[in-house]
Amino acid sequence: MRVLIADKFEQSGRDGLQALGCEVSFLPDLKDDALTEAIREQMPDVLVVRGTKVTEPMLAAGQIKLVVRAGAGFNTIDVAAASRRGIYVSNCPGKNSIAVAELAFALILALDRRIADSVIALRRGEWNKKEFSKARGLFGRTLGLVGVGKIGAEMIPRAQAFGMRVVAWSRSLTPERAAELGVEHKESPAEVARDADIVSVHVALNSDTKAFLGADFFATMHEGAYFINTARGEVVDQAALVAAMKTRDIRAGLDVFAGEPTSTTAAFTDDIAKETNLYGTHHIGASTDQAQEAIAAETVRIVREFKETGKVPNVVNLARQTPATHRLVVRHLDRPGVLATVLDAIKSEHINVQEMENIVFEGAEAAVARINLDRAPSQAILDGLRAGNADVIELSVLQIS
Image (tube, rainbow, N blue to C red; front, side):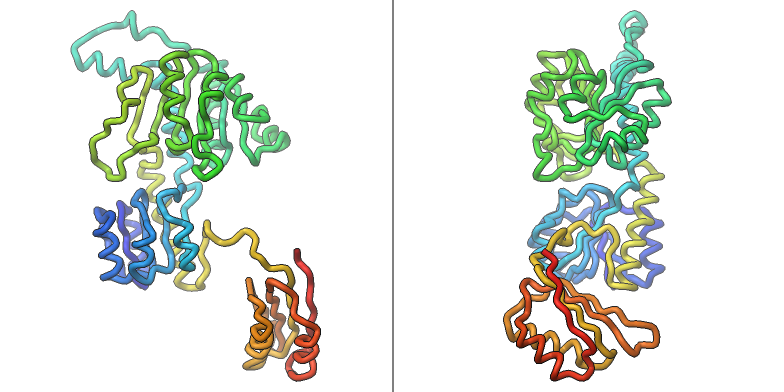
């Protein structure tokens, strides 16, 4: 199996892939047309990336069967194009959760104590204890979480260790789950903004969350509150955030921006960087040695499972619901050609198979096939299969939607 790694990736992960017997090509600086050409030349089975964009021309250039995002988010991959071509897309969720939560708290503390400004003053040769002695402190303050997935959940014990109250909203968060986590459940992001001294965002970027937090949200926040985003820049209406920073003294700690460069080193000319109320970092939330080693190990696990079983852990682009309306259950003797006969009969009525599995019983004498179809086969087909194939023990059709 050929694996092309088109991004930074830990040596331990490269060694692990080679130990699986994979032919590994490590080309971390390839982007755009150069990556497309490399895929065409090397014909990898698996493409591993971190922040590198994966486009439809890249997916069409070779014989890629699996794209692994060595990280959590996968918005830089053309998942729709991969789905059209039957290419698995997988990621490594949860492996960088602690690292991102640590950076989010670093930004909170840095904002509260104005650490960056203080360091800059010292480097200029200035001593200004009077100016930098002003801080609110975190004890007794309220942290609001927008999103309580793996990273958001890691924020909770850290906030509690600082003596903070935590309020939270997430689409999947129930009052019962909130009670288990020791947080107060809120019905909406606006309620979080209304009650929190500090808001930290931890939602994935998708069609529902693009520009999710806008002017109304920032108008609900306390004047002078802190806003932390280590998720994705695009989940925030950045113009609305800048306006709130100017007019309501919102202080922002951002690791992500709407117009980030796609390369690791580049000019960054976004006007938000000039705002005095901004403390920014370079999309480095997951960039700890611990997180990258864990992600490398998970990538190796994904490739191993795919290589040995054909199954893909953490796949993100399988259909949640197919057009199947009926399930044909075939109990049969485990003999060559039984299922081929069944599938030929289904094909004769132009019925499409959506999903299929065949379970063999101990001893390999009999099996049960479950075949999901986009409509029910006719009674004539069923009767023909029952009468015309001695290896078919029983047939039944179930309606599933």
